[in-house]
Image 1 (cartoon, one colour):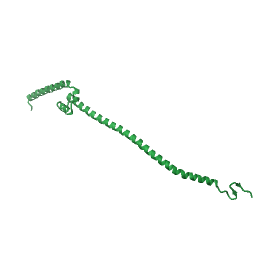
Image 2 (image 1 turned 90 degrees about the vertical axis):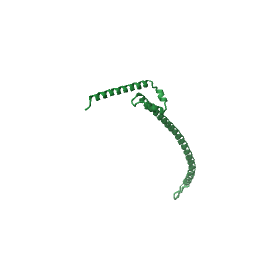
Image 3 (image 1 turned 30 degrees about the horizontal axis):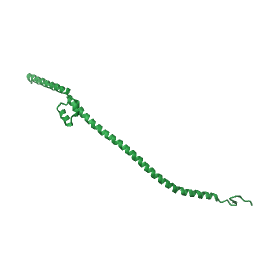
Image 4 (image 1 turned 180 degrees about the vertical axis):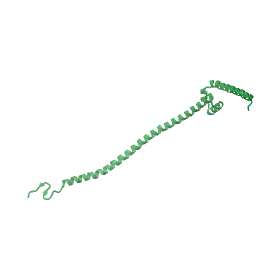
Length: 153
C-alpha cells in the first residue's frame, strides 16, 4: 500500500508544477502581446524556424509562425500559378498565329494547284464540247431523207 504522505508530497509537487506551467503561460502571453506580425513576416526562413522552435506547439507564437509558413507557401504557389497562366497565354497566341500562317500557306498552295488543274481540265472539256457541236451539225439523215427535209419521189 501507498503511504498517505507520498500522496501529499505528489500533490505538492503537482501544484508546484502547475504554478510553473501557469507562469510559463503568462510569460508567453506577455511576449505574445509584444510580437509584431510584420517582424515575423520579415524574418528569413531559418530565423522563423529558430523563433518557432523556442515555443511550445500550442502557444500563440507557434500558431503565428504556422500562419506565416502557410502564407509563404501560398505566395510561392501564386507565383507558380501566374507563371503557368502567362505561359498558357503565350502558347495560345503562338498557336493562333502559327495556325493562321499555316492556313494561309495551305490555301495559297491549293489555289495555285487548282488554277493549273482547272486550265488542264477545261481545255479537253472545251474540245469535247466543240466536237459534240460539230457532230450535232453534221448529223446523218435517215435513209431516203436529206438533212434539209423530206424527199419527194
